[in-house]
Length: 362
Ligand code: NAD
Ligand code: IPM
Ligand code: MN
Picture 1 (cartoon, rainbow, N blue to C red):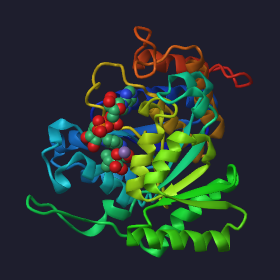
Picture 2 (tube, protein in one colour):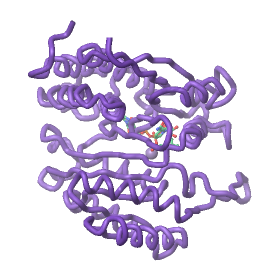
Picture 3 (tube, rainbow, N blue to C red):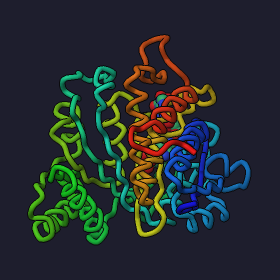
């Protein structure tokens, strides 16, 4: 047998276990076909971990993730745990995981497959051909800045960036632009925020010295939100801070038509975390109706990162071929034409394992 990889699997809460289960089925099928092994070790995170172990990122989850080749994560959170504060929230487990693994670069690709242009709430002629990459800073900014204080009369968060933090994320954006269409839009709020003025000047200087071949533009975040909807095809790479990247990526999900479609990779110096952009979707959890594509494409990003590019391509082919048949989950399907999470996943596996020119399954 060929290579083997240790994958820490963190299903989490809500639809997390449903979509993570779908991704594992797809991964099992393509890895078998391509001759490598994925050794899944499952760990608790989020609300499930609070219930079972009293903390959203228990010690064995920490050590399991730190020692894995990659982390595959569903989603965390839900109304059951929303009264918690500080460290006793499911989301705190996810933030602690990102900090632990130092995954400062969150890559969120957004494109509009031809089969989906008509599903977007935006006009098909505007969204067709959109293909952008949001590079979101993930371990700094207002999510982590100190001081930070909970309170009922007054509460405090701190938006803080240092020059080295901005440089390293800007470098990631510049490198991706070179592999794509050579353009970066840096998004900030430099007309109001000191941290954004630092952000902008550091990005400008870095591109002047290290990426003179990359075309750099700047937008304020309010305008960026509008331009993303008005002229989405003009964007190539967007680089932005933690909070703005969180908001703009959900907005960008309206281009292909559903938040359930978007994958992400969170990368740093250790194992990467591969997670869909969406959350635990408590409003639809437990009904086998969630769209598994964001999770499945996150698994493809994981395989690509692990050096299994052919298997990653199989997955992407399988997803697009399944979409082309016109059968989709309820978030995208025309009324009463929807298929379930499991059925859609079956279709992905069927197409992913029948890619022309690939070996027959054993
Ligand atoms: P959400 O992303 O869970 O859901 C937003 C909307 O999109 C809902 O209507 C939901 O049904 C829909 N949706 C999301 N994923 C879908 C999918 N795969 N298929 C079909 N429809 C999908 O955001 P929310 O409702 O604001 O948050 C719910 C919980 O998830 C909160 O506790 C939040 O903190 C958490 N959350 C977690 C993550 C994560 O773990 N990475 C990300 C975002 C939100
Ligand atoms: C995301 C989520 C998380 C974030 C939450 C759940 C902590 O919304 O990954 O986009 O804000 O980063
Ligand atoms: Mn988010």
